[in-house]
Length: 267
Image (tube, rainbow, N blue to C red; front, side):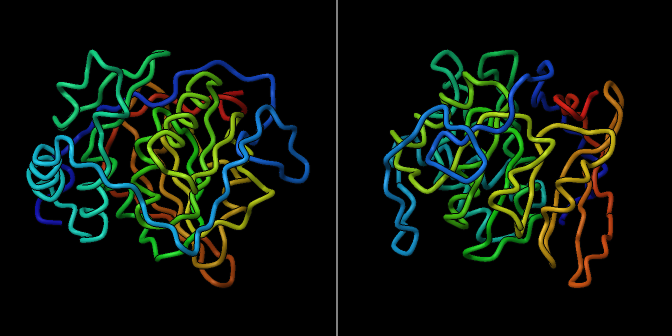
């Protein structure tokens, strides 16, 4: 990284929710052991998957990546290319779209925000994704992070605890052509066991400790990235790597402040 990460303290609102009274619900299609809230009949041919492309406000995206992401030290060329393509302005409400390519979080409703672009790029880079990896995201929000991940692999699974946000993100993915992203509504603490193991797991809210079910669902050689720490205090952006023998190595990289992970994580 070109500059010291400790010069950057990012303040991001992620998931500020109450404890849910439901389990994970797949809203894309049937899966064993999951109750279906909505079923999409979209056919997903991941072998020929090509992410959608958007020309609108392209120059602003390029400038955002150059100054706010690469300029802050994110260096993975595939991550930078992914963020050049995803139209951030379409993942925020209309009143805030004029600010979409500024390097800051923005409100998306339900007392939630879309994360700062730099942090999205950094956390994506930390996952060290390979083409075809299976990724689980805890906290869909507006869907922007999942769209960035889907530029790198078609196998993206994302869970949102707020029902309205989860449904909005699913509809947006379908409208924009992000057809391979699998969405669910529920408490992400328990992960998505029907699709485990995952090569990478990303959390967008801070647990005090990383949920054990997520560690269990991380495959050999997999990487989990999450902010970890106490609510209201500075947390540490943490990278967890599971080796081929199942042993776990933890590395703290950057001080951040996220709202707490809720659901079973805050019980």
